[in-house]
Length: 451
Image 1: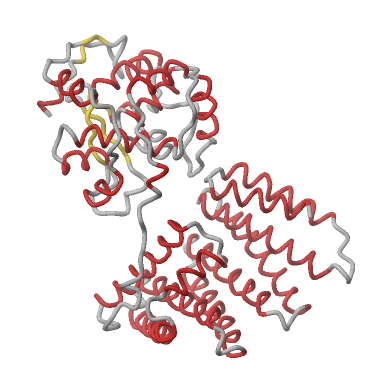
Image 2: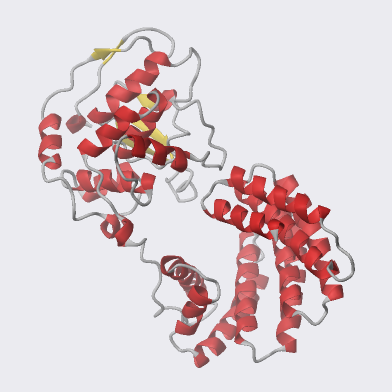
């Protein structure tokens, strides 16, 4: 029971993106499971717990992308334990489904390591096990849905590696299953409800999954593998719960910034609230050589959008509110240090910034709001949208106009736009930094209106 508790807690931390804490709980679960008496009466439960824990460790390492070989080691152990479990419980379709999933995860690690052929062979085995489960219960729509998703996932992997003919075959198989499921449930509402009830997903998450299904079959229609998208009428992603949106006004954020323990934290909060940068990915990867003081711009690397064409980097103005906090860090930066934020490394982990930020907010006498960092970005986008064309704002913030319109706030500070426009109409005075990257020199910051 204690091992299961650690697994559950680890899963919660992983869902929050706190992989370091998740790994600690998974390791504790593994240690407890290994110490447990696994006599014949408990062998089934013991193997199941070991398999789940190793699978969780595999998943966590794989999500981080920092130690794929270790991920593969745990995936391999989880697979061996799942195979032993199916021999003890051959009648259990759930145990066989777990085994199929272990093969899929092991395939992901092989592909991530460049072992493409091995990975695709693992996926074949995954498909074979799912097919065997469906053959035993052909009327079970839950297994049919698993089969449909497996075919679709396999098709996508094949397409990634130029196996287009075989990929098309599995797209058609997935489509055939989708049509059969649709005949029973024309609007796919049953599948949507299953995501919410059986998978215990929040409504926005369930709709996001529906969005993935729509996207996959839309691509199949575009490639002429199929004629119609069976998910086209299903309600998909809503871009978040509007009840969680907050507008964080200037007075509130200034109180919080003044409460921050050091210059790096002040800069992090300012970059999110006044620069509209994503935290942690964009803030922790910002470097001094990406800041052009003379032109009044910073070149922001965006890990989230780098897979889109032209999305790897974007230019963001050095907004007036940012200058004090960036100048403070620049003057204190060790010689030769290129990172703006040095106390945290961005390597796929969020370094528990959310919890620390909550403590800072409470010390400022403010009640923490939902989606701490995201709402700072959204607030900035709302302000900028009142003063600049939407397409310009989206270029700075790094999202699309369609997304921006869905997340913009109605409730805001009525004075902020007037204040912001007033400071933009006046030239920003030149200032001298204590030192530049290699030598001291004057660094004029241009008026934003000239950008």
